[in-house]
Amino acid sequence: MKLEICTTSYLSAKNAQKAGADRIELCAELAIGGITPSYGLIQQVIENLTIPIFVLIRPRSGNFTYSKVEFEIMKKDILLCKKLGCSGIVSGVLNKDNSIDIIRTQELIALSKPLPFTFHRAFDWTPKPLEALEKLLQIKADRVLTSGQETSATRGINLLIELQKKAKNDICILAGGGINSKNAQLFKKSGFSEIHASASTQKTVNLPPKISMNSPKFLDETLLSFSDEHKIEAIIKSIKNEK
Image (cartoon, rainbow, N blue to C red):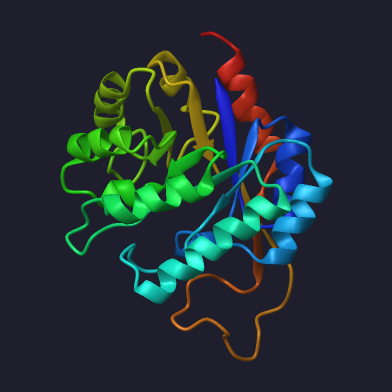
């Protein structure tokens, strides 16, 4: 079983590699669901790490239905990531009813080639997940990152298993959402080949600020969140040991 770690900083990415993760999903602002990371961060991670780096392409927080200009930005970001040497793309587009925008997503997949393409957790908004998976199979996405349309992958395990059966070996169901060393074995025993986690921890880095820079306040500005090397090692130990 492979472990992908979602990272939002160079420190987190370095911790993931050091701990033995198989792959990194690089993004920014995980507190709002993740958006495209900066050019500088992408370049720094790719130049200094050796494990595969998949980059999230999401131009803003909020929904996954994008304007023409936003879609053009996404395409430019994909071309930039390919130029920088990333190993894969994580993205996707929905229609206003939250069904998959097949035309635009297929365009992103084609633009990403020859890199593999993961359809991200926008999948968890789709009203008919089995039909959505069939459409992603048809347009040849490589992976689907999903929690089984629940707040955590353990809660969504039944749908995840159903999706896995339908996917067979034609598309990878990448289970993610609240996965840790205590529950990772569930996904291995259920037949999943890959899991996704942030393995985050927090530490206090400064005194409370005079004024908040967050509007609305998404997170505590006295805390720094990062992927924890020891938590990643614990997940890897869990999935390598049969119980």
